[in-house]
Amino acid sequence: MQQTRVAVVGSANMDLVGTAAALPRPGETVLGSDFVMLPGGKGANQAIAAVRAGASCVFLGAIGSDAFGVTLKARITAAGVDAGQLRVVYGTSGVALVMVGAAGENAILVTPGANGAFTGLTEGELDAVREADVLVAQLEVPVETVTEAAVAARAAGTRVVLNAAPARPVPAELLAAVDLLVVNEPEAQALTGRGRDEPAALLALVPRAVLTLSGEGAWYVDRDGTAAHVPAVKVDVVDTTAAGDAFTAALAVAWGEGRELVDAVRWAAAAGAACVRRLGASVALPGRAEIDELYTPV
Image (cartoon, rainbow, N blue to C red; front, side):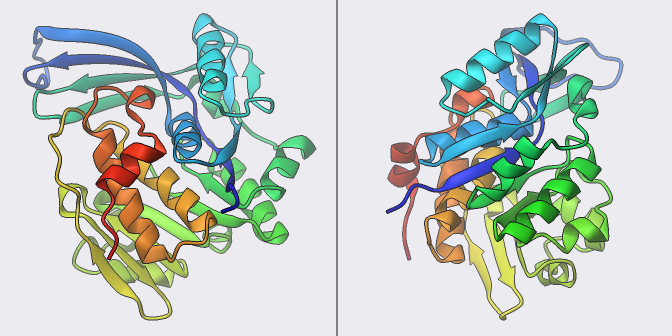
């Protein structure tokens, strides 16, 4: 089996993660139980997750000139991701403030920092996109940059997987270049006004889509008439922070390896389940053996 080449266009943040018995309500202060500082951001998470799932991966994004940026690049590189195209922008890196409750629920505040300055792709960055088997992108960097990458990928025959998170308007030019859309229920509602009741509504925008429903699994739909529900893999939940990133990356890797997409969604569901068993974002992303352990083929 040939190794999938993945290019990820997205954000890199330093995650400041605190845990507590319960999340604070507005105006409330609660005593926490633990704190860790970890590399994160949907782009960096998905790049690291792709490598751990068995792909080679180049990451396209931006970090700041601060100490967080130095740490982010070192840890992304140490994870096996090609960070040769990672930009350094004068100023602060992106930061995510993450609060995790005892039941695994979380609340996250993200300040974009250098991610917001990631615009105007260079020829080297575009070449990295064109040479990949699959492009994976999210919406934590300027949508114009994501669109530019997706259009270049489509022209080169590179498959485009868009994780339309966080929920925000997506231009028609970007949607026209997407081969597979991955969204959760709030993101689907932002795009179509429909959620779990009608996942096929996403097919008015893209030819294939996956609607994730957390503990209720996921739906895969396409314009060929496929509509398949994939159940969630049951595990003890510690932290759900990067489960969606593990899912999206594993889905892209499996599709790039030639799996049928419904089966790729099953493998991705196993990756998401493996991720939630540990605290943190990038450090919780599972390796291929962990995914295979939880994966159940049809």
